[in-house]
Image (tube, helix red, strand yellow):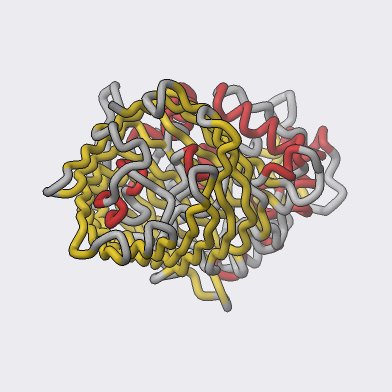
Length: 493
């Protein structure tokens, strides 16, 4: 059940980047969206855009299914390793690392960051009226993983019971006898296979072992209703406003960090991940899984606000504040206790499928690496952000613009710590083809060159396309980012 669920969860939630809300393939290829997004794709970007008259003036209703976008970046993995990891996650068949590979991974992952964003729009619809404005509804999944291990943490997570933080090892021979030996850095692979437990005679606090580490995992599902309309104006100057309200379901939360030997951490994860919390489960509100879709463990509400102006039907200027709100995590909620790392039977990370591996390691059951305290609830703020953008319409052939995105609360799970700046645009050489390109700087991914291609049929009735948030990485091994955004079922009537 667990392998099936993880593969299904990642594949389905692929149908939704929490950083910039580019689950829409129509926005991913240019890197700008604040004054570009229309109909239901304006949800989470700028609800004021719902008040605009559409480019295809005879179309009043839009609907779309299964639009998705995904990005992954790692300072530790090569491009081929990233591709292999993504394939194994989707298939549910991850090849386990050898002991030698785990030793190498412990070294390369030390102080190296890894980021993954998966966004999926399961369904979206919008209708625009001349007098009342525009209404839109959308269901979107967001999943984000960020890891950065300190040197000791990387060694512990990949090597587990054979980690150098344990000075002694208990080995069990093929004959069934056991003995204790001293741990050492040149442990042979054959001996490593016999290790049943690692322990320390001078144990360190977990806060010291994890010092310099940060691990964040979030998975949420939003049901968002937004409204926008013209406030006043004419063809010379028009002002628009919009608001959105979203109901947010929480499916997974893991937030652990240690800095200056101070540890903080909490989690609330759907029972579909099948984590063993040991005795700590009696202290929490337990949620159980009985087949079907993964059970939610949190819920909350959020709001979006936006305004924009159109000058002489050429220049667009927009500002929006998104994700104002919080989630209360009531199911399977735990906080992390700072305890001495005395011993473990945990074998460490077996592959690069961080989502399944980390959820197991941050359990309090047999073989877990941590000690947990059950909680009745945990409240987290949504990853709020402010967007500002402008664009210039170039007749019927295209549009160019700029975007600025600033996080409002950098400590919230799912938020990003650095502002994002981008420039990009659309170009339509013929009425049935739209080409997109841009340049993005900031966020977790550094510099990116997005590129997209969209096909338009029957005067805007149907759209399909594919885009990447960083096309350069498909052709290089250095600075590995992988990104893909696709959509095939977008219609207007």
